Amino acid sequence: MSGNTFGTLFRLTTFGESHGVGLGGVVDGCPPGLALSEADIQRELDLRKPGQGGLAATARKESDTVRLLSGVFEGRTTGTPIGFVIMNEDQRSRDYSAIKDVYRPGHADLGYDAKFGLRDYRGGGRSSGRETVSRVAGGAIAQQLLEAEGIGVRAATVELGGIEARGRDFAGALARPYFSADADTVPLWEERVRAVKSAGDTLGGIVEVRVSGVPAGLGEPVFDKLDARLAYALMGVGAVKGVEVGAGFGAARLLGSGNNDPMLADGFASNNAGGILGGMASGQELIVRVGVKPIPSIALEQQTRNSSGEAVRITIGGRHDICAIPRIVPVLKAMTQLALADFVLLQRRVGR
Image 1 (cartoon, rainbow, N blue to C red):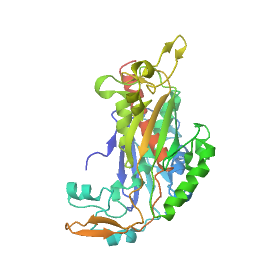
Image 2: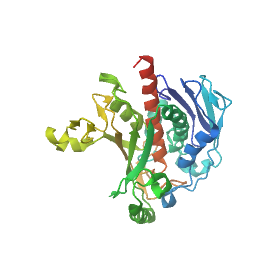
Image 3: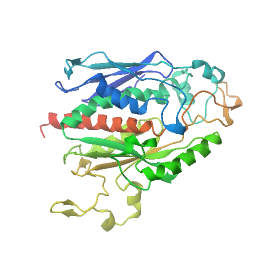
Image 4: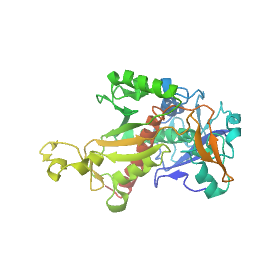
């Protein structure tokens, strides 16, 4: 199966399924001498582990305890492949036996059967959101490289269930429910989640990622544009259906005079470009927004078909989040970090 490796110079390869023995990965290309411990990775994993997220959370409980297997000696990276593993502890595969021959609407079941002729029906197998635990671990390693370069990545929820956050306080987002960018909006979101959960349905939202300290010129022109690689990284997360940079789709509704960011002697007057010009960083803050679809596993009866082509109706059991938010927030942060780490090493290689 291809498509399990992300990156060119800083590469993450992942393995594992939702209901298998465990998940893990290997980071290759990480420079030697960076401070790294299991605690550094665990801090990030704790932000996305199951069982949190308030009313929107799944009942599945996993400690997501990481174990470093290689590539670190006396608290420093050695320059060799960094291997890690996170064991599954609370999988209940019996919840899925009744639908092992049925394609769940909105899931990857049909695609896996069409491509491989078989699929792991237990919680979606490799296509499960649980797969992202390895991405967060890889992103935590990339974070050590980026911090050494003065680059900081933050992410927060700016919309949930169609309700936009009133403010943009990223500094306190991780301490708030739903990793909200605004404390005053949280009660509105909780009310919305409660109503949707009672109806047996799910909802989506929008996450904003901001990156500071990116040096001007990072990125490549033409086919390896910084914004193109970021979009590729973020669109590779299962629940993501859209990515926009800076003004994004709003730029299509502006005049050129309104969309251009005037350059002043001490910087820019605005940032509609989202910190990227011609595929390369402008030196401004990178701003990327990510559209996250509703969780497809809903408690309502749905129409679908089985692997024999027969029309059936399905009610999905098991334990599921009401929304991928907030647990997807550290995943999107991690994918941004992995993409940027790759570009940092590329910039070093070409001597810029």
